[in-house]
Length: 116
Image 1 (cartoon, helix red, strand yellow):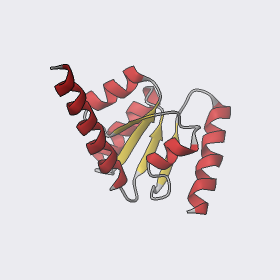
Image 2 (tube, helix red, strand yellow):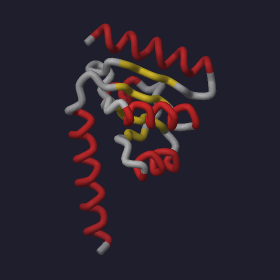
Image 3 (cartoon, one colour):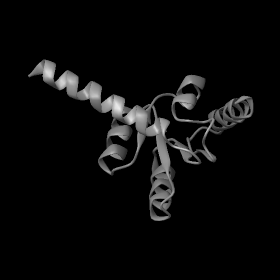
Image 4 (cartoon, helix red, strand yellow):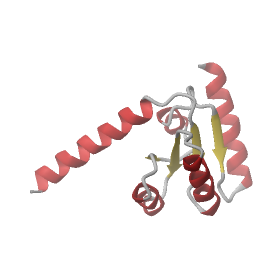
């Protein structure tokens, strides 16, 4: 049973990674707090593709339970932004509570997008 659970988790993770890799012209929402939730609901209402990016396991689980596409990781990390498809994204929305972090993510995203 333990092995079966591990295999199921690995396959689920692979499916999610492929799903995110297939996105084009999507929005990356960095942070799934109050504003991130409002934004995700609005994007869903408008039928716009998006991925929630957060490093908190509980917030990722909550977003996933709501049916949102998620990626767990630190948005200040270049590899995490690349895994979320920053090169193919149309919008990067960083709605974290710390302004300095939001600016850093924005500048990093802009640099990664322009180098693609």
